Length: 388
Image (tube, rainbow, N blue to C red; front, side, top):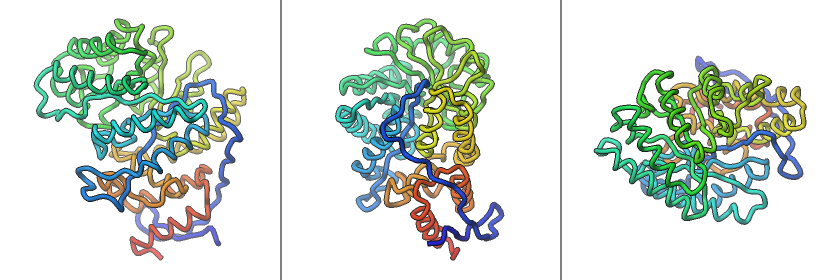
């Protein structure tokens, strides 16, 4: 089979494309890293069973859990039931509960498997939330569920809190209450409004500096309950500023899907750990790169990870909240699921030119694990749009 096909470019003109990439070999055993590396994992919908794809989409649990085994086999921890799994954009709290329970159960059967689970307030309707106590009770409900099933919590940002909080003191009150009650150390989550517009003004300010001071205050007041904080602002300078000011023992997890390569490598004094949605899509490359970094082979780390950055920037381009479509697109091309559809029909959030560029960048980054399969599926996909 010829590894060539016709694809549209950014202005819709059709041109032939010939693949140039080489798939990344899988390790014989899960490698060890010298950075903590969480991959935020997507869920696989089940379009053949859906009766209400926008309200309560069906989930293919077998394929969803199989993908987690894939990530564990490459050495990753999993950030479960986070925004990459479409929390609040296709996966509701009922679905998240089942996902958390199933993943925690599976982890007990996989040597070395580790995960932390997103706990938020998404079972509240933000527009109907009236008080901080409503938010506190909602966080308590979700953290309790995670802990009851033996999990550790990632405290997700809350749309409801963003709506009702009137000051930085309100954020300190809510976070202080939840952290004081947590059984284990918690990872905090600073998610920028480019990922979720309803989080604008989070931490009590639309400006970075006051928001940073609020975050640092919460961490200082609850340091014994904070493992670290994930920051997803797509601005490496802001992440470095936070990283520099964190207390000893509190970790910075990059969620910067634009600049993760340099942030993980670090500046010679400090570096970021990782909690990234892009690791779902480029897991073999990220695994090889992180293993090389742990072995002191910075040149290999850079040569493997840096080609994935243009791909990630395309997947996460504005409107950034629709990045899940690109992540699942690559999972389909690489054979991790047998269809390209997302909960809530989110595959429609991007257009054919976007997907064509993802295909080209994935090939150039050596991210297409099964080139023959990827070409066959891509030809079928573009054919739907009238491209032969």
